[in-house]
Length: 406
Image (cartoon, rainbow, N blue to C red; front, side):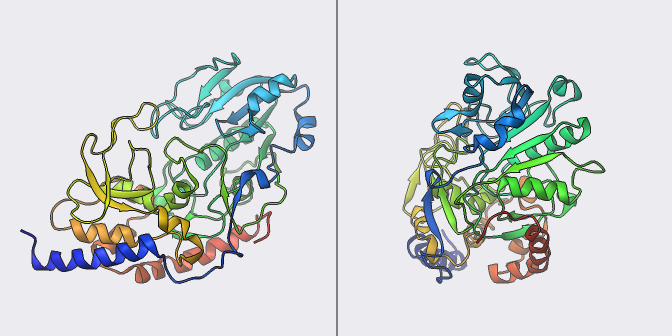
């Protein structure tokens, strides 16, 4: 039997979920100001071979890349080998070099079966290249597609490889790529007492910088320690910060569409709760749900998918929830692209029946204040005020490293 208070809460949630999933919020940008574009409309850093091929000539190259590291339709490693360059080592981030491993799965050292090049995993027993891994390498090349969210681990890999390069005095080139969430800055700024591999620096959840700009900030702000990296960023052409970029290749197995990339900043916080975000389905990070949720029209059943979601939450159980594809597609009408409303609503529904948050939540949020504010019943507007000053300070730092116009 549902209590009268919970019945009222359910009614409110149903109304709010309907508004958000279908209509979005008050308009703050017109479609002319914020554009959905194909990555093919941008000349990425890696496409401009004339700017970095000369630096690679005759060098033993260490390369940090994955399945999205393409020149045209060909992987960067395959392109460089065909052009006669010497690749000594491939450093593999989370999800592996060919991008076929689940989030959080250990990646093993080995050989690339296609090229025979040695692969050193940076997402297994170690996250940073060891000194022996760097032996014989003359130059490092980094080309990975980021999504502009603090807990997406590629910026942590970037930082630790830059740190190793600085320690060994090895030049480091970043070929820049667009940030699909680069058009805004939002969320709580990391409290460094919560520093981890899913949040290393005092930046907000959504930081509004390309990975090349982020590398410049890491170097310029002294976040590598006493030494600085000999860093070169190859910038893009025709990229502006008013773009939502539709990527050619999914940046990770569970971000298959531009809508999932757009929703990822908000929905990933659910990974620190009892709520499913659709891992183990054909539509991860496009909605949320739970077997005990009693409203909504989004029905899904997570299953184990090799290389994508091994034994996801609620495997084999039907979940009921909300599909947010419509919210994503209504991007020009959304007041806040990083939303807490869904998290607050689901906490309101489940707070009396079970433990809603897991210990992982504070790591994702980069603070324990967000969890405490939600538990204390603060509305999103009040919670946002608590991170306003930190956001403004971060924006002052960020401004120094921006390469592209709004």
